[in-house]
Image (cartoon, rainbow, N blue to C red; front, side):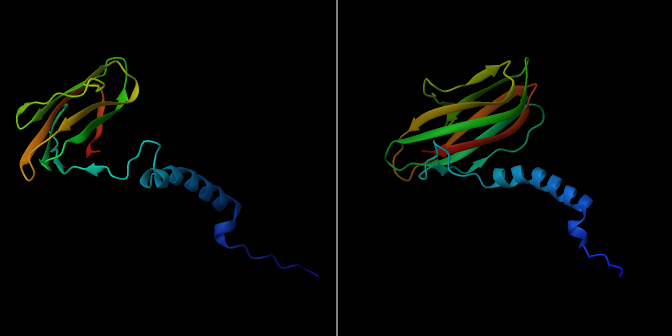
Length: 156
């Protein structure tokens, strides 16, 4: 008595299973990166500021953010990140409030040189403005021998 071969849907054939496994391994990090969970330092009250940062020629970027005063002091954080840092990578920025120099807290990192991999700079600062008054904070960022990745300005 001859046995008829059992039908295997194309998805479960050995070669297709291998392709699905590779696809799952490649796509899994993308799914995790798209939906990060809360980290140990995340703060649900953090507010992302609306900023304008048009791409500029060369290795520089001007970032401008609108801030409306609340009458109470506010803590802010600016972070700019780069990829591909190596032994001759350099980056720095200057911060301004309404065109005047803005002083970052002493633990801020305003420049770097010769750091490897994913690198970043940051500025922690405090602002207190009268309620309802409009202000502009801006950051002039320069870098060399790295790839600009992203920035973020938040109110803590």
